[in-house]
Length: 269
Image (cartoon, rainbow, N blue to C red; front, side):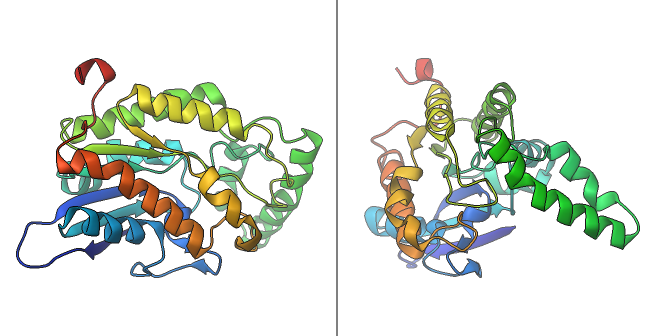
């Protein structure tokens, strides 16, 4: 899913280009998926606030799809030529907002779920999908929420690749911010998520090591968990606003010229 949100002055000044590489949290609120121009979604809040902070027009492009994982994001930045060279390459700032689904409690293996769309006939496909969906929370509870959909070592490898490719595509010229993983209050994930704090710390530490600023999402979402989408995952408008404002604050120094762009720590001295 790709869309643009413009913000700030429109007096002929060249817009700053911001790209969000995300998942369904970038376009879904407590009511469900929203149209691209919904002003309360965090990418649009980011664009609006950043434009106000900098006094510049902002062109924000979102690359996101439901259930996107770090593996999907790596494929995007290595295989999709439009995303690589027409969207990310010219960007002035990139927000990397994936990882939440990777760190969700493991139930049915993703490799097994990936086979379902290829099953025939349709009646068999629907039956298998329904049974796997019902089995997922039971398996999470059996494991007491331990284990992640993407194993920690594999996530570390792929997330590092993702950040390196973003830096490479922008030639290190862009400002970069990594948005940490959200948690949930979801029966589908067994109403438990004991490994989230560790996964969040590991992901944000890795982002900093790769030259990105880090914004932890869950502390911003936690005060609003009573108003989550019925799925127990997606955020209400006040939570989107908190995330968008935090991202804008993290990006503003670099885009004003008084902060570092994406680069390894040794490159920034």
